[in-house]
Figure 1 (cartoon, rainbow, N blue to C red):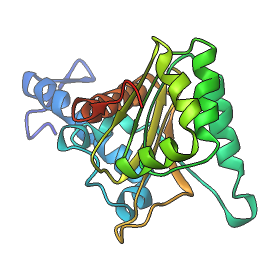
Figure 2: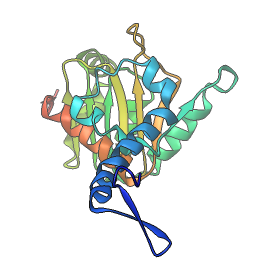
Figure 3: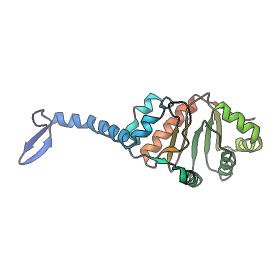
Figure 4: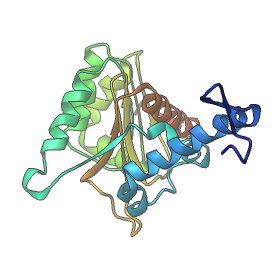
Length: 211
């Protein structure tokens, strides 16, 4: 590094040169990016990343504190239980659902009744499923001023971001959803990344104000 004029030795101590300081500015994001990829290498390698826009994939270093929570067959409901506990203790909620779980409509309505700001985006298939089987719950949900409900054409992703945590689920490259692996983060950078992902999808979604 001395030969490259990145560091200099003065009075027995090494310090960065002017060029070294410039290099350090760009080295940290690169190192953080490698850390984020290597920490969850299998997750990124095994899943289809098409649902993550380039602007956020280029910020993958912000997810370096995230870790994959994976269900094993003998404990398949453990991570979902932890997920629900985190959701129910959150003070606000934003989520995108491309899959339907019967317990979600009543859970979202209960959160709305507790005056928790909640915004949801679903795909058309999920919307029609909810409309046909949970019509009354959704109608009440839409009456609250602190709720919003949107439909996005299609996306191979499911994620949640609250004031407590961010959880990201993706599809495998063969087109099937992976219900057992979630990338989860609790730090401020992960939450901001998740919020920006939600904003990306909300901008392209149609708001449903009544059924």
